[in-house]
Length: 361
Ligand code: GN1
Ligand code: MG
Image (cartoon, rainbow, N blue to C red; front, side, top):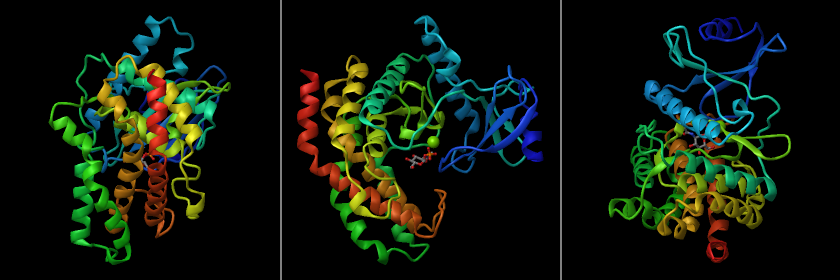
């Protein structure tokens, strides 16, 4: 606590810090809630940025600054109320930066949004709101004047993720390859089809836009009445295919179980969540989406469980160097759960195509 207190003191907080305690369940950064004593001072969120994953913190914070400023201006222009709860607000340090380097780690502080909730699962009504919110997030950023950098180069590039997996297999650092052969075969069977977005992009048929790129359910703040206040965890906001945001939400939101469920019978794709989210997403995004983007939404739904399966498996094979794990087989359990989800998604393909076509009529 004493160390954290001294870190917080570098930022321009209002009020007196009463308590700092861990917050949330992210797999990458370390997050704390900073509670202040005074009624009229806000509470804050303190984060240690995972610097081995986000190597260019200057660029990262510049991206986030550009995105939050742009959204704030849009909300102001639209005459929105309660803007402080609808867009993240990062505090400056005495040097005027939005992060502080203590010689070892990078830290940042943002205002804590009061009376807001995050969820690990959602019902159809909430996923409809989530769909509208992510579509709106992309729509608001469609005309951002700044050029955003790739905070993690090739983050959602499927060809690159497959290369990482194949490199991991070739090195076999943790001696785990033999144990996972059946999964590697299943992944290879689908590899070509899953790299479709990269091919379309190279052919000039598919655009990149500013996307969130980590639209897990729990990266969204809901108000007490279920409507969405804002999208959080902006580290990965960068140019990508719109598939990233659409597909990654459904990977978590439409999974009937947790991302790391051990009982695979419980892991299935929930069509009701798919329908509600898609309806909301298309309502706010259809005006700027191109036909090729809409046509490939069912592909996006399969792409993200597949990509996550590839990423978890590569990490398992590498000896667990990327994701935080709670027990030794955790990344393997995650791989299996994502693969089961993918199989369930594949069974729903005709339904998805019909539903999307009906939404567009
Ligand atoms: C990571 O930080 P968190 O838990 O929101 C990861 C995502 C993965 C997700 C899997 C920078 O997100 O890409 O989809 O875990 N973020 C990064 O749960 O790699
Ligand atoms: Mg998160």
